Amino acid sequence: MKSNVQNLLKISPSILLVFILVFCYSCKKTKSNLELPSQQSNLCNFLNQLIEDDQKYRGDERIIDPFFAIIDSMKKAEGISRDKYVNEYSREDRLAYGKRARAIANKHPIDSLLVDSLMKLQTEIDHKSTKALITYTKKNGYPTNENTNCDKSPDLIFLHSPEKYWKELKQLIKSEFKKGNINKTQAGLWLRHV
Image (spheres, rainbow, N blue to C red):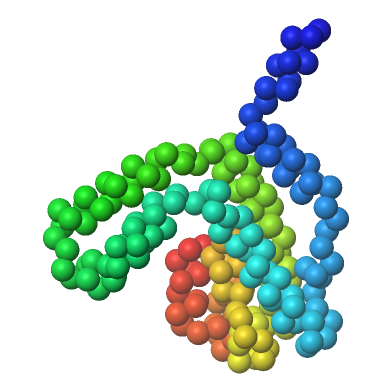
């Protein structure tokens, strides 16, 4: 009995963190700010929330390889500009920098269990966001900076949409392009993705 309790107390901090994150996320109530906005003043808040949620776990430093941040930090500490690094350093020198940065980054391995758990949570958010943006777009047209007076556009939402929505999105994107609510670049980018 005593050894079972001792074994339970030996859970790694990463695994414990994952369980806590999953528990907290599952206990959260559905955010009311993902409801479709009923007024123009709520529209910008709705779009900003979609954009913020889209990057909620994707931008989490705990799951991003620190290599590029380390190499940038090394260059900054040594007073080397990006232009100087690219134009004046030989390929061998850049590779040496990369090897030093990789050695440092490897001392801080990324916890794959944490990555899997956070990306599962991100996928759930992507489902909710995609569904909300599709519903809004069908009702009001695709929200752009020009037709909403908001300073941000939720273009990444459709790029990160789960495969379940791709068939519906293809039709919606074509329809919105024909109406002039999205431009050729947006339509092309999204249609290549879905």
